[in-house]
Length: 67
Image (tube, rainbow, N blue to C red; front, side, top):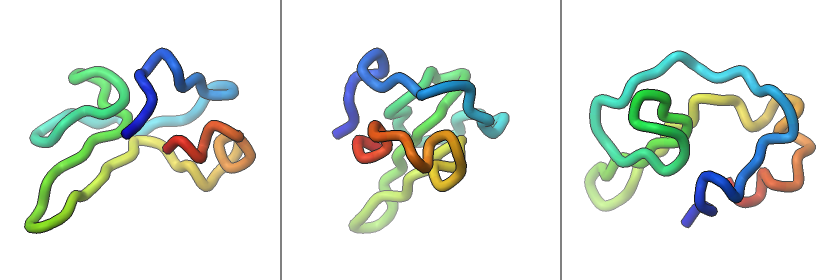
């Protein structure tokens, strides 16, 4: 499970997609600004991240492991 929102601090400004929650559970962010969402599908889950964790500055960020 992810850390509480206050425990994960991004290293600097990060570009995020303009998105809105249709269904699922917001794991990080707010309902009007979902950053990480989990949706149950079949026997598993689908995750949506409104940012690209493979691009700088997140690609080298030690906190990325928690994501």
